[in-house]
Length: 398
Image (cartoon, rainbow, N blue to C red):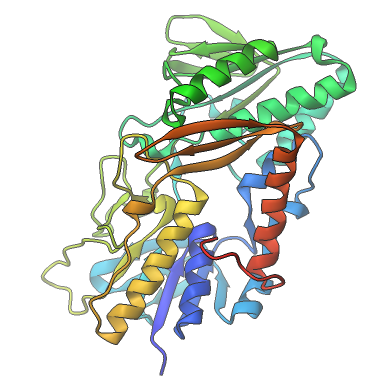
């Protein structure tokens, strides 16, 4: 009988690990709180109306049928590793598994007045709220727009800066196409003095040129005190006035991880080794010591100071975890690690072009691309959806 793997989560890491574990012949169950997987990297086009909400989702029912795993739509309420139990809302505890993979993602750093901003990286429905508010301002014919992202000093790898830039540039491009860009004031803000520094020095210089060229103001290095209905209040008492504030808080360890017996870093993420295995110490009462893996945003990742949690790294971790479970089951010592695969890789879209961004331990580059860059990112979205549904072959390593 095939060994059972329970996967908690519904994002990149959860899906990729489920796919590979099924290829390896395991009995896989995924527990997620949504009936769809939301593809955040292409949701940047929802606010400007270039993509619909439906364009940015994959059905978990369809994915489960294609790959042969079971999916349960439940909210996980408690993880108890010492008693090998997973509790879900409205359900008895689940103890029927041999391996556990935690890929739940992250919570967000709390900010005073968070009800006054909308995040492109928050709940999926927030993308529609950004569109609705932007449409209102376009209809009005003028407005003040603020786009920004925050940090987490306890774990800097949890910053989400790219999507803030992408939505901002796409909004600029839409307003320009409508012939009303001069009626709108666009401001970028971030509490760190050099936002985007993890992309490299060249990238920072290029970004400054773009901001000047597009007439986008910048407020950098000012600590955010509070978000209010009509803007942002900073520590020095100054205020950024805004009719629409789009802000991406940094990630924080989920509250769910507290009091679980899982080892956590200062920010609340699960400590793992290079093979994505949780380095836990079961207490003396535990009778069943079983392998646990944490991947994607749930994990505390090691690596260079500029490291960042991204979707492609989540998939690398997922494939490593699946392979390592297979090796454990076969009694073999071979393992795959994730740390050597850490890099920053993205096509940062602007609506009428893009920039190819890459960084590893040897180099950092940002290459501006014309309209082909925009279509490259759209092409990736098409490839992602169709390859996950086995409608087209997968490119090795993707």
